Image 1 (tube, rainbow, N blue to C red):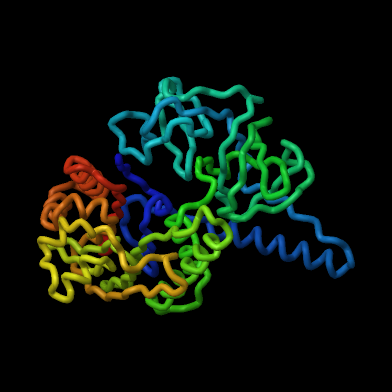
Image 2: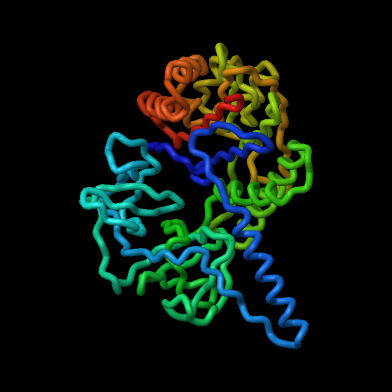
Length: 398
C-alpha cells in the first residue's frame, strides 16, 4: 500500500495535540477561535431576542467565506500526488484516488490549485477532467467552518433552510453559480464552496472522528491537568465512535489507535491507546509509549523476546483501541525533555518498516523537521511500505 505525507491530523490513525506552549511542528493546523465564538454569540443573541417577543427565531445567515468554487474536476488516474507547491520537487500532501471530485480554485496554466479532503495544493491539469458548469456528479462533502448556512437557492441572499455544523457530512450533487448543490438529511439546498471539503468517504473514518472529537473536547475543557484533559477527550471519542457504529451496521467494529502529547515547559505529558507510538529522539532514541498489542504482552510476561516479536505473525493484533469497547483505558507518561530533543509521533506503518536506530539516524541526519519526516516516509516505503505511514515531528524546545 502506498503512503503519503500529510499535514492533517485527520488523515491517519494518529492524533497529536500540543497544549500550553509554542512549538515547532511539521504539518500543524490552526483554527480561528474568534470567528467561531462571534458566530455563536450572534446566533444565541438573535434567537433569544426573537423568542422573548413571541416570534419564531429565524436561522442566522452564516456564510464564513463567500469565495465561490470556479469549477470542479474529476481525477483521471489512480494515486495522483497533490503537491504543496506548483512543482514536482515539492512535498506531497496526499495521493488522490481515481474518480475523486476536487474543487478547482485557480488555473495557473501548468497547474491547477485544487482542494480535496481538507488539503489545498497543486496538480498538473492533465490529470484532471474539468466538469461542465451544470454537469451533475456525486460525491460527499465535509463542512469546514464552525457553522454554515444551507441556502434554498445558489444565492447568498436566499432563504436559510438549516445551519450545518463543523464536521457535518453532506451529499454533493452538483455545482451551480459557484455554490455546491447538497443534500443534508431530508433537506436539499446550496452551500458556499470554499468551506466544504470534498471527499469520497460517505462516513468519517474512526481516526478522523477521534481527532475531531478530541480537539473539540480539549478546546472546551476547563481542566488544567493534561492527563485529565486527554482522558476525558479520549473517552468522549470512544463514546462517539461506539454510538455511530451502533446506528449504522456498516460501521460496526471500527476503531483506531491514538497518541497525544502536551508540552508544558520542559515536560511532555503523553497519552496513548493502541500501537501508535511516541519517541523522544536526541543523541539516543527512547520509545515512551508502550504498545497495546498481543506481542507486547507476550514480551512483557517473558514468553517472547523483542527480536522475535518484531516479525511475529500476530504483531498487528492490538489489545486496546478507541471504539473497540464501551470503556477505553489510555496509558499516561511524563517525560523531561532536553535541549535539541525531537518528539516523533507515528503509526506502526513506520515502525514495522524501520528499526529504532534507523529512525534516529534519519532524524539526526536531516536538515529540518520537514526533511526528517520526508526521509522517514521514503525509507519506510523503500523497505516495503506495507501499511499507511503517518509521521508527526515536533521540536518543543526550539
